[in-house]
Length: 336
Image (cartoon, rainbow, N blue to C red):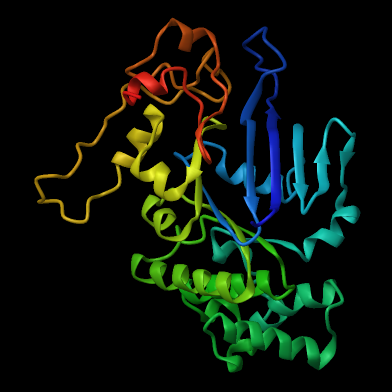
C-alpha cells in the first residue's frame, strides 16, 4: 500500500482586509481556506473541485508553501513544510531543497512564461538553479523534456509568442518536470485552452504520471476531466472540505447535498436520453467569504437545513472505507 506523500491537516489561510472607513468593525478577514484536511498517497492523483472562489488554488499554493498558511499542518513525505503546533514555517531558503520535488503547472501559460526568454532557457532555468546540470548538458536535458512533452527539440530556440496556447502549456509542463519532481500541483491546467486541445494535454499529463511516477494535486472546475484523471476527489465550498473519497464512489454516490448538486451539473453524454438524472438547482447566492454563515456554511442554500445546521458546523466523518462527508443529515438524506 502506498504511503502518504502529502498530508494536510486543519489547514487555514485567512487574508486580512483593510479597515472600512464607513464601518466601526475592524479585523475582518477573508477565510479562503478554512480547516481543510486530506492526504495524497504516492502515485495518486487527488482532484480538488468546487465553484470559483471556493479556495482550490489557495489550497494548492499553501501546500507548496507559495502562500504561508495561517494555521494547520502541511507535510511532504513525512517532513514538515508547515506545522503551527511545532512552530515550523519554512522560509524561502529552507524550501529550496523541496522545490525540486514539489512543482506547479500554472493555469495561464501566457502569464507564466517569460516572453524575453527562449523556451529552452525557460526549461533550463530550474535545471541550473537546482544544480542538476550546466552548460550543454542542461540544454540537452531541457530539449529532452520538451520532446517528452510533445515538442520538437528544434523549438528550444523559439520564443513563447511563436507557440499556440496548447504548445505553451506543454512548455509549462516541461519546465515543471525538468527538475524531476515527485509531486505536482496542476492548477486549472486546461481552463485557458481550446476544448479541442484540452484532451491532448490531459492525456499527456496522464502518460507522464505513469511514466515518471508522479503524484498530482489536480485543481479543476471541469468535473468530466476530474472523473477521467483522478483517483480521489475532494469537494470544496467556501474554503471548507465537504466530501472526499475515491472518484468513483464520490461521483456515483455523492452523499453531501452540495456534492449532489455540483455533480448533477455535469452534462450528460446523451442529452436526449430519457433516463438522464434531473439537475439539482440550488437556491440563493453563495455567501460572502468575509461574512460566513454560522454553523454549516451551506445551510443558507441547502433544502435539508435544520436548526442544528444553522448553529453547529459539521466535521468530516467517515461513512465507510475512504469516503468522508461533513453533513449532519447525510444518512437521512441518502436513506441509509
